[in-house]
Image 1 (spheres, rainbow, N blue to C red):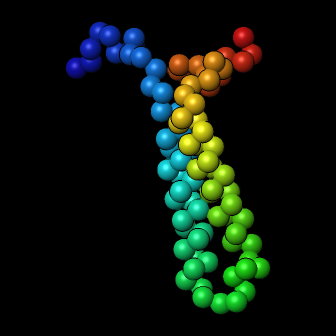
Image 2 (cartoon, helix red, strand yellow; image 1 turned 90 degrees about the vertical axis):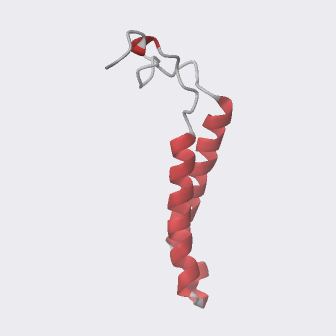
Amino acid sequence: MTSPNAQESPHRPRRGLWLLIGGIVVAGFFLTFLLISQSAATSLTPMWIGVAWGALMAVWGLYRLLKGPSKLDHPQGGTDAGS
């Protein structure tokens, strides 16, 4: 049973939470492979790109989480930049 005010629920300001969590998971995944290998070649492997992308994703998620919703964010998803 749904409430009659379900469509009027306030916009949740947790825009960056899943970016933050996803970035930490991606960076941790690639960093785990780098730390398990225990060889001298880990400093030259392209796995650091995955760690960097995950870290950037987490930083962007933290920024969005702290800043809150943008004026371009549409309440139903997407943006209203074209209108």
